[in-house]
Structure formats: C-alpha cells, structure tokens
Image (cartoon, rainbow, N blue to C red; front, top):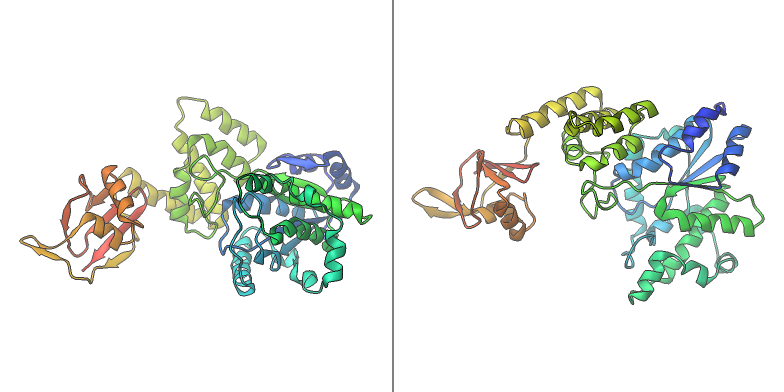
Length: 409
C-alpha cells in the first residue's frame, strides 16, 4: 500500500489549486493530516464516447489524491448512464441502451487512462447494486428524500417554470448518485460545480443512514474555445484528449487571451511561481500573448503525446498559419459525380464544392464562409458565393482556419 502523504504544504496545494469549493474544508483538512487513507469517489456516466480537456480538470484532481496515497474509487455509471444526468439540461435526454453505455465506457477508459493509472484504482459499476434492488429496497431509499428538496435544483425549477417536462427517472438521478456513495463508503466526492446538488444529496443520505458524511470538492467548469460557455462537444468548443497533436495545437492557439491563465492553472502542473510570472507577463505590453499560447499548447501536448510531438505540431502550425502553407497531411476527397461542363472544363459551384468535400455541413455555412473571405482554393481567396470553379485534380481547398481538402478527380 502506498504511504499516505501528510505534508502540510502539499495538502494546502491539493485543496487550493483547481478547486472551486470544499464542503467542509476544515474537516477535510484534518482528515488529510491524520494520515487516514481516504476513499475518493468520482462517478462518470459514459453518455458519450469521447472525453475532452474539461473532463481532465476533475480527473487531474482525482490523480492528485491518488498520488498522496489515498484510494481512488472510479464509478462507471452503467446503470445511471441509461438515464443521463439532468444537471444543467433544459430538457429530458434521450435514453441510452445498456450496449451503448458499455461501448462508451470502453472508450472512456482508453482515454482517461492517459491521465489515471487504472491498475491502482478501484473501479465499480453501479449496475452491480442497482440491478440487485427490488421495489422494497427502492421505496426505502426514496423515502429518505422529498420531492420539494429534489425540485430545489436550479435546472428542475427552470424547466417547471418554462413548462418543460421532467421525467420521474430524472428525479431519481440525484438519489441514485447519492446511493453510490453509500455502496463505496465514500469519504470524499469530486465533481464539477454543476454536480454540487447531487453530491450534497450523498451527504444527506449518509447522515440519514447514520454514516460519516462525505466531504465534497467541486472543481471549476473549463470554459471552451469560444471563451463564453463551458467546454462541450455539443457546443463544438472542445479539445478532445484523443485528438492528434496538430489539432490540439491549432485549437489551443485559437483560445481568447483571457483564458490563458485559466488554462495554465487547470490543465498544467506549472508551479505557483511560474503561474504568477505568466500572469505578470500577460500584463506586459511588450510580450505577445501568442508566445504564451505556444507554451501552453506544448505543455498540454507533451502530457498527452510527447515533447517531440509538441515541437512538430508547432512547426506544422507555423507552416500553415504563419507562412500560409498547406498542412503536411490533409484529407483527399474524390469527386466522382458528373459536373457541369464549360469551355474551361468540368465545373461546380463553390457552395456545392464545399458541401461535397464535407468542409461545411450546409450551403448556408458555405455562403457565410465565402462572404467572410474565409475560403481559399489553391491559395486564392474566393470573393463571391455565386462563383463557379473549374475542378482540377490536386486542387487544395481551405475553409476557415483549420479545414483543408485536396481534390482527386
């Protein structure tokens, strides 16, 4: 068994960096100093197959507890995942099948394994206990909660006021998450700020069952690439942990300057002294924020890939965005359908071409990009959305900053 680290400075850092709120901080601090091996719970519902840097924030905190010698308990919500966590949702989620949840869980393990060592983690599936419960067990459990208490949740109250439905299964969700804490005897539960209600329900249930109440640590929700909303696949403002180095580099370079410090704090292991220097440098008009983003990108890519990959990604980025070159590897799209003929040869409207190459999802998006002078063919900007272009073998199309395609006729 690993030795429990009780160094006051390390405990102080554990409870400060990347932490939004602790319930109850004094109590948890005393437990950490006592040398007792705590059971640190993190539950995930694999409702989607991919994880992004927003998930990394809480996974990193779990790893920090693990590195201090405590027992990490990773709950796969293969049962609750079929309901879907209603936190922050304005409407009921579509139900997932057991097969979909387990398939997503496999992908989740592969990606989370870039951060956590699952050989040293206690992994539990909550279907183990929920599938074994009968109606009598369920009624005993739900009797410890009131409808009024559950409906205090902001997302539920907003949905009621707006006339949107709330499924009974969704009302059950925080109760089920709370019961997970009973089954694994959680001392501490980790989660994003949007999970606070569910984690408090765990404390309430433990108290009502005469068990020690778990402490709670909420971590900030990472703001996405748009600089406005939390990182999310559905908002397409995310960086996936399984993305290649070039994609990661390009996306990190696109973040607003206002997020640089936040990303360094939540996504890297730089010392507090280095973070303070970065904050000071960002206030210095002589220092270009672009250079800070380059360092950030290389720190993150080195963690998920390697230092060599980070250096290569910087070279590729400079080639494409600074020197206006073409990426070393771009998808080739075969144009096999009949095109219009003219004296110039085979032709196609620029809007149809962008849709055909899948660089855009619709003609309206294509039109918007052309009007914004964000479409190039062989390095020349397309100025009019009504333009008809001659289709030539090997021509390179660029849409926006990072989307490229090479045509094969």
